[in-house]
Image 1 (cartoon, rainbow, N blue to C red):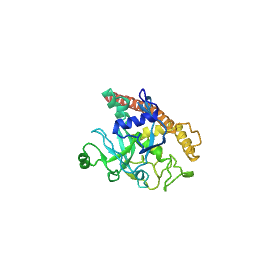
Image 2 (image 1 turned 45 degrees about the horizontal axis):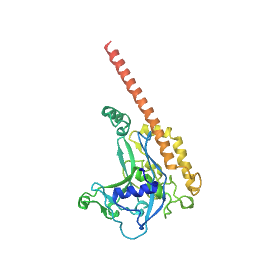
Image 3 (image 1 turned 30 degrees about the vertical axis):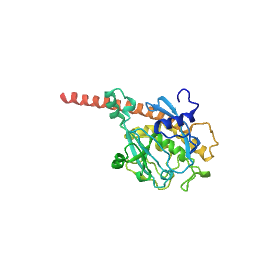
Image 4 (image 1 turned 90 degrees about the vertical axis):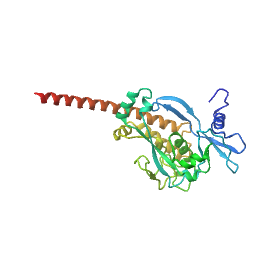
Length: 293
């Protein structure tokens, strides 16, 4: 939010206009409401950068709204039906965790990459044929490449927040409200792409990363008791129609608890790796010395 902004709603409308040239102040758009705030952090949730306040708008007039994105930006109009489809295809996006923990030290970055591996974020694969017209300065370049579109990370989390309040013909919780943990399988369970057979959208937990090393995931589970409690309380709140603890930012609480467990797990893993290296060096030195006698 910049100085002079009247509030979060005004800021979202201004930034939408500045970023993609879409004027949400026109009578063609209606503000439906606001989702939970999202904390933008670095260093695995340790340092807060900003608070993101997402607002949902509904276009009440037919036809595609005019936009004017910058040359390096591509816009894709995605129908909600594609996200609520029972055959949603899932994949992964791999992120180098070392770049988040040690962005300025190249040798430390290499060491961290060896010790803890990489992170994998689940992503919804969007069918380019369902996205409608692609808004960009050079549409011919986009049409030739036809990149695989993936919805992941922060954007996926906000999308799942919205879908959790939708009434759908698919699997639902009590009172027709989708549970954030209501899913047929874990999209993190395998690296290959998967097809959801039942759920409207997997749980909010699918926005959290898994690590390429199994022992890191194990220690996250060990330290993740608070995180799992928050998820269960969030689920209970939705099943009660959102009347339970309305003022709690469930998404933010779950993220904070999860990354707190991640930081503890990484400390334990690095210490155990260091002990293992020292033991290996000690055993190797003992073997060499005993062999010379």
